[in-house]
Length: 234
Image (cartoon, rainbow, N blue to C red; front, side):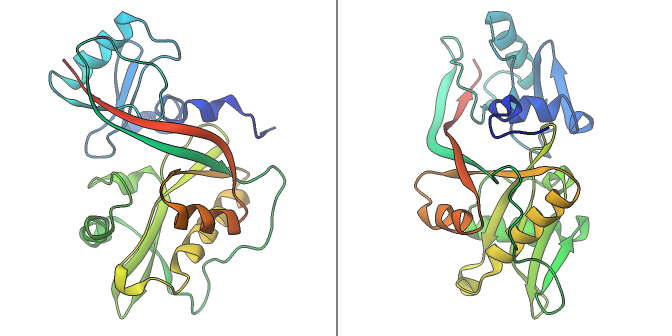
């Protein structure tokens, strides 16, 4: 049974890399990271010691970017801070199954595959929803909205710790905002996740008040405040 205090959500990167995304992972000792063409995220053990950080440095290479996502542990001296961003983790409350906007005739929501990657990368470059690589779409299902054949909005599945699926890369082209595309996409993904017996969750920057308001309207609640951090290896 999944509950709102499920500890797997405290380490969504590590639990994904060690589980359903193991086929997209590379590792050294107790350190792991996604294939760099898939995602930037990496992970160490829950209570890392010097040997764990050494494993991660060896795995990534000297002077490499270590995207630690929401890992609260501090790396040793010599790891250069790259960024720190306040954010929050939101979940759908247990047992909540309200009606959600989604895919259907006339919605324009379509599934995106490898053939759509150039358009997806272009949309991400124009809207900046967060890290997105040429193979990020392999993490899960990605949906989009097309208008006149052009991709104007998208969202997809990213981290997948046991029992949960994260919704991510929610973005809309500037010329197509205000038409409900993001809500339909998040709703369609959440409905799919719930239908297969899992729970949806997501992460958002604390400064993105527009997105937070949207997610709360769709029934998401804040589970935890988090800090996203990145470092450069020695």
